Length: 431
RNA sequence: GCUGAGGUAGCCUAGCCCGGCAAGGCGCCAGCCUUGAAAGCUGGUGGCGUUCCGCCACGGGAGUUCAAAUCUCCCCCUCAGCGCCA
Image (cartoon, rainbow, N blue to C red; front, side, top):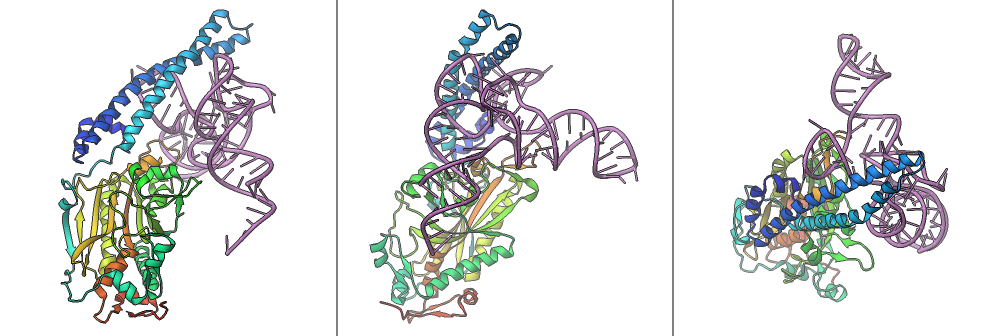
């Protein structure tokens, strides 16, 4: 949520920034928020005056009681207040509700370094690492390879759970856990505290961390309960300190979140391709930071650097793009995507999303920073970045590290986590 | 799931029966005192607004009343015990 104070004090700046999102709906919402805010403040004054009179009359009647009781005039005056106040307060509450409804639908303000563009074709490549591997004659898709190795069950999973689900079986499970552990160890070396969060959240904290349209499209709801399966550990970690005041001396707080993630993703794109690239359930090691506002740009680069290091250690070529204004989600002020080189597809595809959400999530969640019992609270910044989503990492590793005989060489950095296993071979436990 | 106890400022607590300006402690900040520190003393310590002032804030909502932390109803959450359970 945007700071309402900014709306009042620098409306031109806010409007110009929202305009860069290239969505006229935002400008309309902005004007509505400003208009309702003005009306609300006028209404608030009116209500305040009435409440002041009510309080004053209440006190006079209380005093009069000890001196033989209030006069009929005083009583009549006091009795006239509630009806007036009720009408004014109803209007006041409605205006505030309307203002906040508009305000909450506004996206975050864009960082000035976000490139201007209409969609993902206009994202700007800011760096590349490694040499894209040229197309091999008989390179297989990761899905085909997994099936040949007997390390995945797609068809049976579709029968038990539907499209977008899968069983991993055999040594690929070790590879999945190795990726998790490798990323976790890297983050631990760099001061990130591991967190296994709840995998289900209530609606109220959820509304603080994501935008409402996403909510309907991606979240799985538990029937009969106010609980939703998390789409990423970013969400429960962001909500961890909901309504609290963080001690500014303890910032930044760095976390390494570990969770399965559950996404319906109906709408924009479904589960459109065989394999584990886009699925309803996957494991992710996530980085998350609560930061002082002035530190967040620097920490955004730190997150990006950590994520890049994961793929460097895996030996996977990649590039980093600065996501343009037209392609940026509502919550982020700036976002880098890391796109890994998929050797079979001969294409860069997204494996990491690294966002600076500035104060947008924290304000919605009612998180402030400062010193306890001292005035001058400000809203901290939150940042998040994938360290590794194991499903996509598995896909890209299989495309790159496969051998002509259908086996897969285990990336060296993962071997210590796999009991020294160097090659994935067809599973003996097929059936 | 059942029963009970709770939800009051950053934290802890009083007030609730019996309606009338939300009391106190801890922590923190400032000042006084001190060579320095502690102790002590004094003041401050949430949100909103058109900020010398006013309003709001006792889990949320509705009701009764001139007036609700307090009375009534509905809802949410937490804890404890019991039940179930890996």
